[in-house]
Image 1 (cartoon, rainbow, N blue to C red):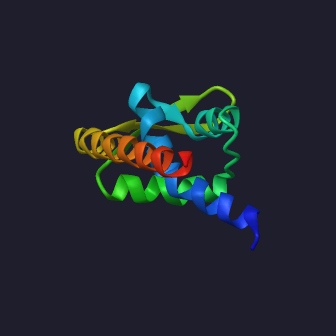
Image 2 (cartoon, one colour; image 1 turned 30 degrees about the horizontal axis):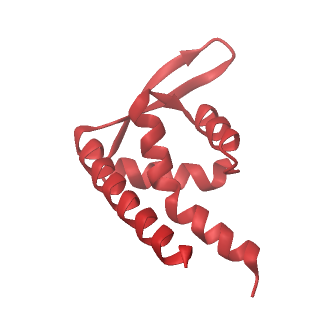
Length: 108
């Protein structure tokens, strides 16, 4: 069994939770998100991130605004919506329950 594949699937499964958590604290630009994820040891490329952000936006969890940039094209800054905050709260509860269960099961 390929452990790298399993680890990648685990990371992918929690990526939405991580993205919403980061954007919940402040508006973020894609390169900021990528850097924060890298700092947290979750390497994600733009090709993975953009479709995820689009899904979250289309679900009503994120919105964005354009801001002019002095060093290139305008930038899209994402922020969480009220609906996104409710969804994030559900994910946080699910994460707490899941980590508690996994910790209990794997202790023995």
